[in-house]
Image 1 (spheres, one colour):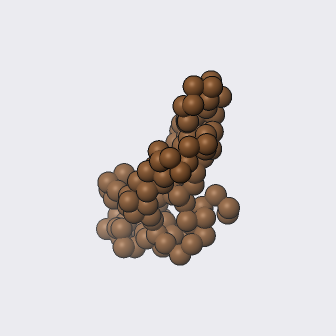
Image 2: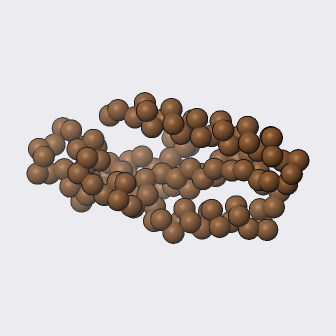
Length: 116
C-alpha cells in the first residue's frame, strides 16, 4: 500500500497543532487534533480504497464486505471502522467546557490502532 503522502500530511497537521497550541495558549485558545482510524464515510466507501486494500484480489472481489476484515486488522478492538458520530463526539468533548484545559494533544478515536 502507498500511504507516504497521507502519513506526511497527518504528521504535518499534528506539528502545526502543537505549534499553534504553544503560540495561542496565552490567549486561552486551545488547539488539539482528533485522529481516527478508518471512519465509515465515503472516504473509505469507494472503489479506489477497495482496490488499495485488495490488490491481490480479483477486481470483482474488491468489495466492502470482502475487505472488511482487512480494515478490522488495523485495529486492536474487533471493529472494521468507527462511525462518524464517534469522531463527532470526540470533537464535541474537546470543544466543551469539560476540556477547557486540554490543549496540544492528539485524541485517538482509533479502536486501538496506535497501540499496535
